[in-house]
Image 1 (spheres, helix red, strand yellow):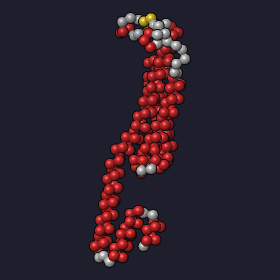
Image 2: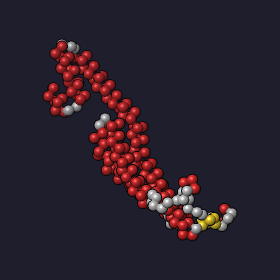
Image 3: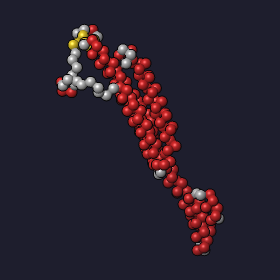
Image 4: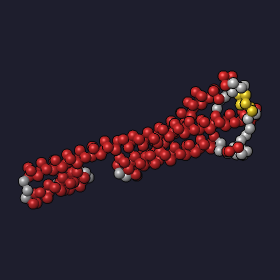
Length: 193
C-alpha cells in the first residue's frame, strides 16, 4: 500500500496510507481508523474548496486589472496623446483655435506656452512614444499579473508562466482594438486624430 501511494503522488493518499499503516502497527480498530481517515480526507478536500473560493475574488481582480482595464486605459491615453498632437499641429499651423459658434467667439488666438507660462520647448513626448510605453507596460502588467495569479491559485509563481502568452495576447489585442475603435468613433470629431 505504501508503494502505491508513492507511485500515485497524491499527498492526500500518501497521508491516508501513512495513517492507516500507523494505526495497523499500533493495533487500533480498523473500522474506527478508516472512519477517521475518511473524515480527515473530507476535511482536507473541503478546506481546499474553501481556499479556492476565497482566492477567486483575487483571481478575478488580477485578470480584470491586467488583461482588461489597463489595455483600455492605455488605449484612451494613447488616443488622447494622438489627438492632442494633431490639435497642437493645427494650432501651430494656423495660430488660432476654432471654437464652434455655440461657444461665442469664432476663434481664439493662441500662444505656445508650457508649464506656468514658460515658453514651450520642442521635442517632448510624442504619441508614438506613449504608444510604445503603453505596449511595454501592458506586457509587464500581464507578466506580473500571470505570476501573481499563480501565487494566489497555486502557491508558486513559476506556474504562472503558462498564462503569460494568453494574458499578453488578449491584452494587446484589446489595446489595439480599443485604440482602433476610439480612432474610428471619435476621429472625425478631432480631424482624424
